[in-house]
Length: 443
Image (cartoon, rainbow, N blue to C red):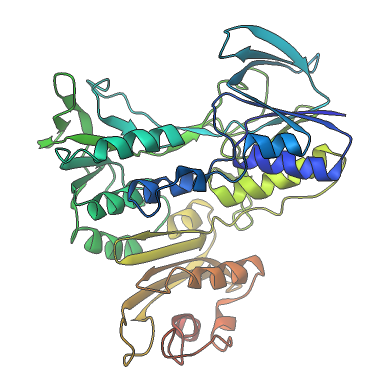
C-alpha cells in the first residue's frame, strides 16, 4: 500500500504517525511545500510576546524523526495537480523548479488554511504582516525588537488578533485594534460575553469597532493606516482577519465542499472521491449539536481527524464523532471559553431554546485574587438539553468550559448541573459553583 499525504502540519503529521503504527509495511510519503513540518501556529502570539524564545518549541516533530519512523518527507515540494482517474499527482520541486509525477493508493489532502488577506491600498509596504507560519512569527519578532517601532495596529479582533494584541502590550507597544464588526470575537461569543472582554481590552488598547481599514500610507515602510473613519499612525501592522481553506489544489477535481472551500468528508474522513481523504484546516467538520457541516479551524479537530484518517487509510475503520467547537482564549485579565452553539447559531439552526445568564465570583472572597465571572448557557426549550455555553472572567473561568463540553457531549440537561458535585476549595471555587447556580435558576 502507498499512502501519499499532502501537507505536514497538524493533521498530516498525525495521520502519517498513525498510519505507520497501523500499517508497518506501507509506503508513506509526505509532500510539504514549506520547509517546516509539524508546526503549532497557536504558539506564535506567545513567541512574539517573549513568553519563550526558542521557536523550535512550536515544532512537535522534526523531519529526522519522521524519517526514523520510515515516513518519507519531501520538503519544499508542492503538489500542483491531482488526477483522480489515474490516482496520480503532479509535484513541483520548489528548489529546482522541476515537475514530476507520483501515484497513490490512498491520498490525504491536509493543506491547511491561508490568512484572509483583504485587498487594501499600498499593501506592499514593509512592516505589514499576517501571522500564520513560523516565518511570519520570526519576521514580526525581528521588527518589534526595533525601539523605533512604537505604534502597532492590529486589523481584526478574533482569537489571533486579541492574543497578539496582548503580546504587543507586554512589549510596551502602543496598540490599536480595528475591527470591522460591531463586536470582538463575533463568530464565537454572544454579546453578554464580548461586552466583558471589550471592557477589559479598552484598559490596555485603543479599540475601534465598526470601522473598515481601507489601506496604508508610507513611502517604503508603512507609516499610517487609513480607515473609513480616520488616519492612524502605524510603525507596523498585523492583519488578523481570519483564515480560509487553501483550496487551490482541489477545487477543480469535483470534490464536495462548502461555499468557502472547506472539504466535506464523511465520518471516516473520506471525501466523495474514492481513496481521497481530507483533514485539518481545509476541512469542514460535523457539528454534534446542529448536525450540520461547519468550518472550525482548530488544532484539536485537525489532530483528531488526522489521527482517524491515518488509521483508516491504513485499513482501519474508525469514525470521527464530530465537534462541538470547544475553544478558549486569554486576553489581558480575562479568560473566555465557549462550547456548543452560540445563541446566533441556535437561531440559525432553528432550534427552540432558552438562555440563562449568571454573574458570580471565581472563588471565595477571603482568598486573594477573587474576580468576577459571567456564564451564559443555552438549552433546548422543550427537552432542556444543554446546547451551548460560554464563560468569561478571571482565573479559572475558561477551564469550566470543559465541564460544559462534557455535559453537551453527553446530552445532559440544564437541570442536572444544579446538584452536580463540583469541587469546592476557597482558592478555586465557592460552595455553589457558578454552573450549579445556572442550573438552579434556569427556567
